[in-house]
Amino acid sequence: MTKNIFPFLLILTLLILPARSAHAQTPTGPVYIVQPGDSLSSIAVFFNIDLTDLMTANGITDPNQLDAGQQLVIPGLEGVSGVINTQRINFGDSFRSLTRRTQVPLDMFKRLNHIVSPSEFYVGVNMIVPAENGNQILTNRVTTKTGESLLEAAVRQNTDVWTVAHYNSLQGSWDALPGDILFSPGGNGEQTMGGLPSAFAGVEIRDLPVKQGGTGVIKVKTTSPDIALGGILVDHPLHFFPMEDGIQIALQGVHALLPPGVYPLRVDVALPDGSKQSYEQNILIVTGNYPDDPLLYVDPITIDPAETEPELEKLISITSPVTPEKFWAGDFYSPASQYAESTYFTSRFGNRRTYIGTNTELSVNGFHTGLDFGGGTGLPITAPAGGKVIVAENWTVRGGTTIIDHGWGVYSGFWHQSKFYVQPGDVVEQGQVIGEVGGTGRVTGPHLHWELWVNGVQVDPLDWLTYTYP
Image (tube, rainbow, N blue to C red; front, side):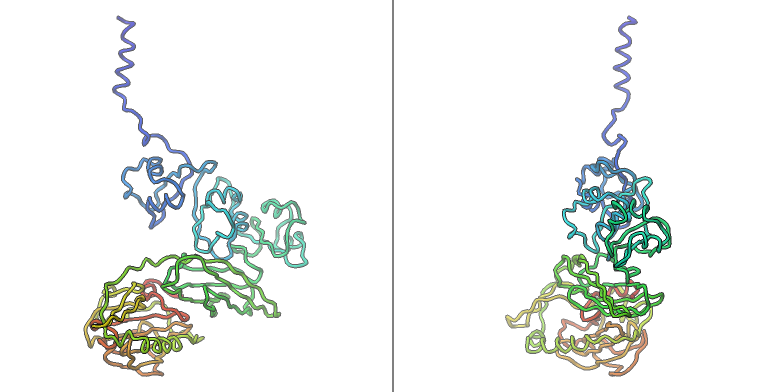
């Protein structure tokens, strides 16, 4: 009887103990810290893994239960341990400079990010950067000038040639090329985040990735206050203006109908000695996710090309000049703040639209070029920021029209007004009443249409109510 009790106890123990599921296993692999705005689906897509595998590795049964700061194990990344960081590529970053600065091997960096060619390294793209235990992030830049040896550059920037060669995988002091961007720990070198030419102390593109209808903010810090800047974003010339601490800044709108993709961003430098430097890199422009509006039936004359095209050309010519003086300070305010909540929008910027002439077959496709606030005739319109009035008159399509120059290539337009309280040449303050809401021009009813132009392109005014520019 004693011999038979042990098999019985073993079977009883197995029946009592709960079976270990895949969810109870200790997951292994690198860890990603969930960021605000992340979802399990977006994380799976970003790391190019199956959503089910991601949920299984972390014991997650409800994909909607995710919190910022939560740690997720990322399966399938063999050879990677520790915490995985993501970094938005900014202007001046390159394969070589990023791997040197982060000390991540190039082959691992390419494998983690599924990169085939350096041409895929776009400004605004998020990259996976593993933070291996013991890895240093190097911020001290060592740049060799023309005719200068690596030894001379290292001494000039308070480091030594052997350290520079080690951290940058050079064969020796002879292996560095003029202008090559190298990194070393510590020292008194030029602090930078990228591989920019020597005239640049740093460049930052804000609010990446830039969207259709967005405002690109390009901040450049140069190594000398006497450096003049220019350049292009997509196909528009950049205009830079001085800020504090040697920073120059350019604002540039991106057209709402520009197809998502990669486009050129170039910054040009003219030095006091007459020499020039230039750096160009592709920047990612993403969709604005603009929906379609219902069909709009309007007065046929307001979509007749004989009327619309000359009026648009007139508007472009008015909003193209770039005034060097900046008339606004701080945030923009809603022009409907005296009568409506700032969220009371009847139509948003960028919505795709089709206008149809009443009782005709005439139609026009386009997009909504501004932000519409509801409200009846006679309600007050206020200046969203300080500026100078340059137009206050009646137009065919836009009706009662007031245009304010805020400086630096930024203009506000207010359409469909019933009354004007200002005239060209007037200098207005933020919050000053400039006119009244009406139903003039191409409308289906009285409302305020606020349009914002930045360096020749209409942008989403809601961004300017949400963020501070520059």
